Structure formats: structure tokens, C-alpha cells
Image (cartoon, rainbow, N blue to C red; front, side, top):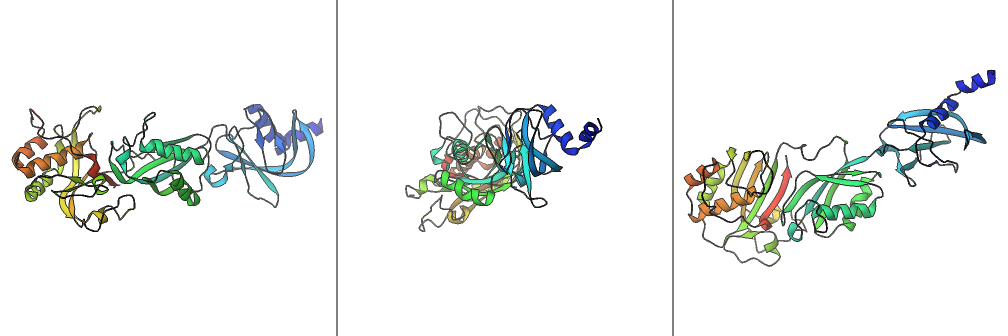
Length: 373
């Protein structure tokens, strides 16, 4: 009886009892060659069991295991500790303690790993960012590339959704993965797996609480266009052209009117469920720029040396409606052509009635999601 009481005081016995009573599914392997099979182990939250194994093999509760001389619980992020293991969520670690320990970890709660990635892409060949079944989108290609490199469940969430044909210089994407990713080496592998018109610029670990749709206070778009210039075929992918005479000075005046809180009901496309068409614009400027500098001399957006300048609408806001920037661009072209006055443009910004839209939505090819603030 004393021997039995002593057994119950043994930490190793208590440890095994807790795990056995938990009766969770899955097989467990650990470094050192032994295995624990059957409905046996639980991580008891986010903890990891680190067990030092000594010699001798015995049987306990019908499970074959080596005798345990001691164990310790360590609450640590799995991304700091785990490497991929066998099927059914099993993961094994390779850490040392007192010379010859073995790390055992089972993840029945499927503890996930989180990463923040920055993508740049040419949107010409894609039907926007968001995933669509059997339709080429940016998210489809990113998910496909990630799935080819890592096992287990993986999901992605972007900070915003660009429309068909729209480009991005710095799209933020949260990646959630069952498998741990080594960011330093994974960046090269991911770019090798992605199409040439999508590049991952950076990937880093982040907290699970990171929400890409709310992490920034504002975002900035750039719209590039030329005026009555003949563009090369490749440049037509990246710069829109408006082939009519424009009064750029009047357009610049109208662009400055956009700053502030306005009702943009005249400057968006229907089809999305929005509670209000009121938005706040923090800055808006129309200027002449070197397109290569705007596009960061990226290989994704090749611009010839002959094209030294174009026009740029730079606009930063706390939120945008569907096609809003492209409608604003078309509205400015209407001002520049003299089809509407600056005062009429101001009334439209106030949400005044417009019996018939005076423009078509501008081409997506000149629009870039530039950055988040």
C-alpha cells in the first residue's frame, strides 16, 4: 500500500494519469525512437510537455513508454518551439535540457501560427484580389503557392480588396498556418512558387490578434495617367491615357476640394452593401511625376526611359467605396475638359443630385494601392 501511495506522489505518474484521463485522439511520437500510440495526449492549453527520458521500458495503462524521471511544463509560443511532425497534428521539437531530454508536443487544439506579409502585384491578368472559385485572382494564386509549400490548414486575409485589373505596391496579407514557417528562407521559396506578376516583398511573424482590415488608420491610392501620349504596349498596362485636351490647373483645384468629409454618392459604383456613402479624405493632390519613381523602379512595372513624366492623382482616406477613386478620376477629367465647372464638381462632392452620370468609370490599369498609414 505504501508503494502504491508513493506511486501517486510521483510527478511522472500524475502526469501520465492526467494525459490518459484526457483521452484525446491522435498518435504521439518523440525524438529518441519511442512512441505513445492511441487516444492519449493533450497539450492542456498552450503548454508543451518537456520530458527527460531515462533507461528502462515498462507498461502503464496499456501504453508502451519509457520510464520518466521528471518533466516540466513550459508555456511558450509554438512558433518558437515546434517543427512540423507526422500526421494528425503531431509535432516534435528538438530542444535540449540537462543533456538528454526529449520534447513531446501534441496539438489537439490546432494552435496556429500567424504571419504578416507584404505583396506587390500587377493586377492586369486577375479578376481582383479576393478568392473566387475557378477564376484567376490574386488571393487564389497566393493560396495556391502557400499550399504547395506548407502542409496543414492555411488561410489568408488581406487588408483590402483590389478590383479587377488594379495593381498594388504594398498589399498587406495575414497568413494563418498550422505549420511553422521559417520567414528568412520562406520568402525566396514563396516567390519561386508565385506567378511572375505577383511578388512577396516581406514576411514576418505577427500576433494572432493582428487584423489586417483594421490595423491602419488610412490607406493611399495613386492613379497614373498620360494626356494624349502614345504609350508602348507594356506601359499601357500600368498607365492610363486620356487623349483629350485638359486644363490641369482646374483639375488641381478640384482635387483639393476632395479633402475633408463628403458624401460620395455620385462617385461610386453600386453593387456593394454599404451603410453610408460618407467618407473622409485626408489628402488629395494632382501632380506631374516620374512614373518610375512612383512605381519604385519595380521589375513588375517596367517603364521605358523615354517616358519621363505622367500625371498622378494621390489620394489618402479612411475608407473608400467601390470604384470610388476611379470615379473621382473621371470627374476630374470632366472638369479638365470643361464639361463640368469646379463649382458643379463641389456640389457633386456634397452629394447633390446628378440626373445622369457625366462620365464612365476610369480604367483600372492606372490605379495602384500604394500603402497603408
